[in-house]
Length: 436
Image (cartoon, rainbow, N blue to C red; front, side, top):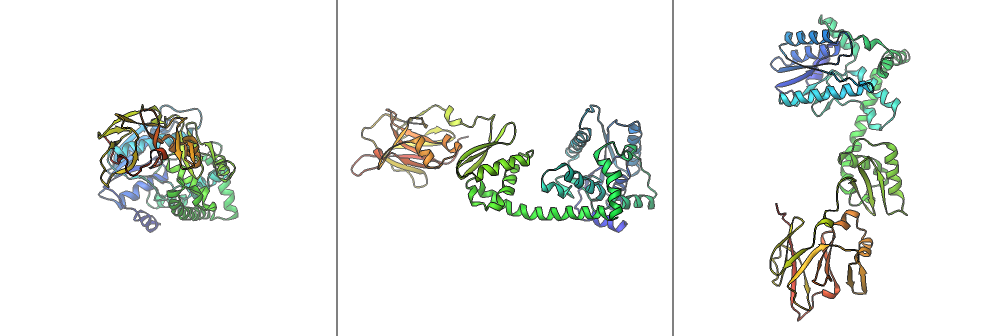
């Protein structure tokens, strides 16, 4: 048993300062003991939370304080004074991890160790299975998740108790852990899992093995999805149908949206698969929408003003003078620009004193070889997304005639102003660097 625990601890690269979550129970007592054995020179910071949910809470705190002193560790504690009436277990967990995060910043370390073990993992997987959710959640807790390290996930509660007894360790017993009605997790721990063990005594190990298999399969899926997510925003149809749903989920999470339901993903997939609806919206949260616009997709914050160009006034351009517009610089000139600048040429029948750069208007038109077309219609034909339509700009004369329109990153010149021989030629140039 000693070798098994040591082998698990040796899998990690430990920092000089390590924060150890210690409740006073047998799991965390063994964790602190083994870490001090493994890391005799490390600075251990014992982190304890007094939830004040039991009469013994203060005695638990004093026990952990003495334990920290025994192992030459720094003792840090906090009290949970604002106990809610509902979702106590969930909010206690959030409070606990906020405390750990504060300590990590205080001691400038990225290592926080907790004593979750194989039985905890089995309970977590069964709870996820019963409550429903994403398949990836059945992988259970990770051995390492950012700063949180769980070295005991492959070690059972029985093994930890045996270790504690062999080393004459003392620990505190939480009476609520023996109350099957106290929490759903307790019900699994006290009633369901013991009955499952009558079918197979190795049930905890087997549930953990399944969780590991799901984790490995999820890692394979994620590796492929990371490739597809690079292209899905600009052309979701290039993603094979069988990979679209996992890629969509990963894409949404990469955008910072983690709380969504499978029913919403089903709506997104219905929207993508509906050929008769080239554009559409699915609400993912109170403030975020999923947008389909032809072959493109994106997430839109409903509270954020995305149409920044529409609120910018037209800017007047003077001949051979650089002007700023929407963090870029532009020049209208009668000298051929350097090849390194993005530019296009055009003709003017009369030489005006200024031109204008502005957002597109509803009645703007562009002359084509075969006639005129409204820019609104042109945007539809080009299958521009809503964001791309917002980014459309035009270069216009003093009479508000459109000389050229910017579609995506390219300018399209009005046929009436196209460059011709033996006519005075002008250029419109854009520099890529942004103005600070």
